[in-house]
Amino acid sequence: MKTMELKAALLNGAYDERLTYIYGGAAVEAQKQRYAAAIDSFASLYGADREVALYSVAGRSELSGNHTDHNHGCVVAASINLDIIAVASPSDGNTIRVKSEGFPEDAVDISTFTSPRETPLGRSDELIAGMVAGFRKNGYSVGGFDAYTTSNVLKGSGISSSAAFEDMIGNILNYIYNDGKIDNVEIAKLAQYAENVFFGKPSGLMDQVACAVGGIVAIDFADPSLPVVEKIDFDITAAGYNLCIVNTGGNHADLTDDYASVPAEMKAVAAYFGKNVLRDVREEDVVASIPLLREKCGDRAVLRALHFFAENRRVTMQKTALQTGDLDTFFEGVRASGRSSFCYLQIVYTTKNVAEQGLSLALCLTERLLSGKSAAWRVHGGCFAGTIQAFVPAGEVEAYRAAMDAALGKGCCMILHIRPVGAVRL
Image (tube, rainbow, N blue to C red):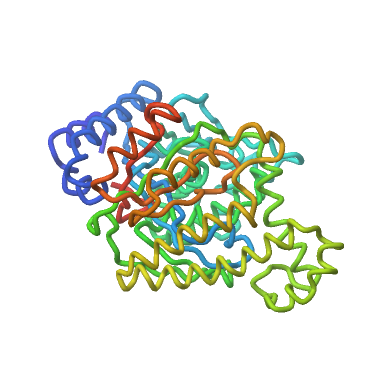
């Protein structure tokens, strides 16, 4: 459909049913205006007479399993109703042009940018080139396209803006050049490849899978090349709770070394036993070897390894709790995960700047507000900066939001819903 024809169809209701399914009925009009504005921006940049389509990729929230995926552990995660959207059109030649709202345009020549830079710069053009390289590596078709994107998956907020962007590039390539036949789990694996190899960030696979697949999913990464993804049919909103993400104002920039230290230290413990990851090591062997591990790997590495084993057990418990509707047990696991992440995983603040502890403060305030109620809270995402997560009873949510906004800044508390789909073309 041509650019302006698509806008007219959108505003005249042709996409209302689809938008209702993705965002909920109350959000349809706002989303129509959002997509229409994106179409206008595309038209002004790339032309009003182009064959275009609309795309969406969800942000994600990790519900259980903090820093387990990179050591082949298990997680429970969910797509949320914040997303990156795109208007995209195929183009002749070998250039992918992506203009993201608020950022300079990326123009990537995919015939020349075919291998990672010797020293990655952590730039979005590396994610685009990495996705194309991953598609080629796996035998999929690629080509040029022009796209305009806008996102409310806030950068540095722990809801995976980079993973959503990577998945979006794969989503567009999938539909324009591969007839939409590539499975979203496969797109997620290619997104991890782009982030690890071209972008230079040693992330696990959880973010990409959760953004791409959608809904609540339990993921077992025992074999990362074939992750076992299991959908969980549970509606937290219908059960009377809101998922709140509180953005403390910290930013994830310049924290790559902090993030990298977590999988590296866990893998150092695994290497002591001749293994690559902790999933292949017995917990009792780690406990029995603590004196030697302290000397070889350091105390923090031992603590992070012990967190991994306990967190992996919690994932199993919390998955079962959601499947059976046992929210008390699920919430117990959320709170235990938060304590472990603070005390043992040690990712609530960076030791580079101990004066800045927005996450610690947000957790403290949340405990004061919700302690004694049927609720739960924990650090969220990769941490060291960014956001916390809280499951708040619907009747308490406005008071909670007001209190957090008063302390940490207006608009810091986002009241979210879990959406049923991840990476899609509308």
